[in-house]
Image 1: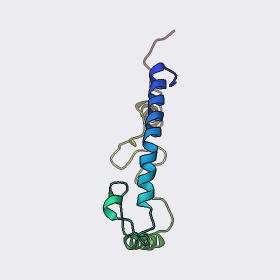
Image 2: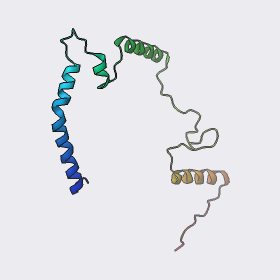
Image 3: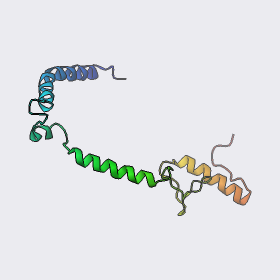
Image 4: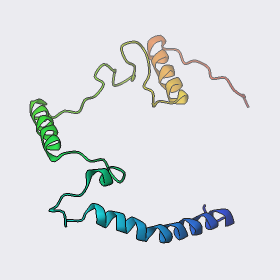
Length: 126
């Protein structure tokens, strides 16, 4: 795809814009990462570039998360209320990701197992 004249023009113009803005962006990054102020850049200048979070807060969050993981038994949080064969949950609903054709197929399988009769499909008979 992306071979039309319009997309080629848009890519060209984006490249021009990147070239034009590169020096300004580089200057802002250098200013943000400048270490001439004893490793402290002004927080007001950094906030418009990135989200500034104190290191202590991040360390506390990681400690809390690590403590929570140790209590876990290492299993993924799955939907255990769903029947693995029919994929129905306790209220008789199929998963959100399942399309109508798959639902129809599984439903037909359930009905044939229950009644023993194969339901005749609608369609053109040749």
